[in-house]
Length: 95
Image 1 (tube, rainbow, N blue to C red):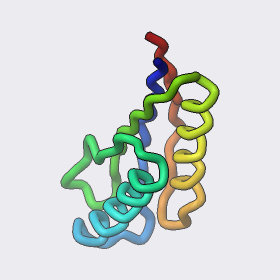
Image 2 (cartoon, rainbow, N blue to C red):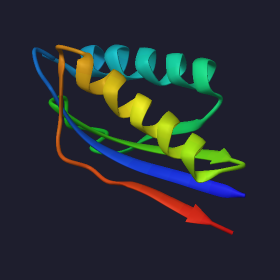
Image 3 (cartoon, rainbow, N blue to C red):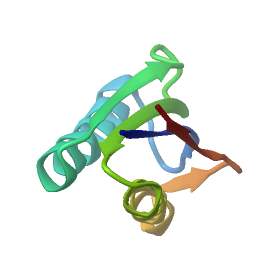
Image 4 (cartoon, rainbow, N blue to C red):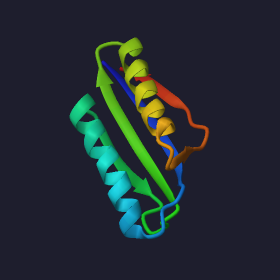
């Protein structure tokens, strides 16, 4: 079993309120859960409307698949013009 993790530090461009932030983040999180079947949640910066920290975990049978899926998640956040992604690291843990 392989567990891949990713912590994303995001800057939210053009977000003017916590309501805007939650709308943007909640939509992305729900899409990723639905599309990839992963665990994903906002894990920090809850009360800061211009920032968000997202934690992602994905379980797979092999490291290649886990890294591919987490890289795709990173790309989806990075492609959104309302979001700037700070540098992050994908961690792969084998058990």
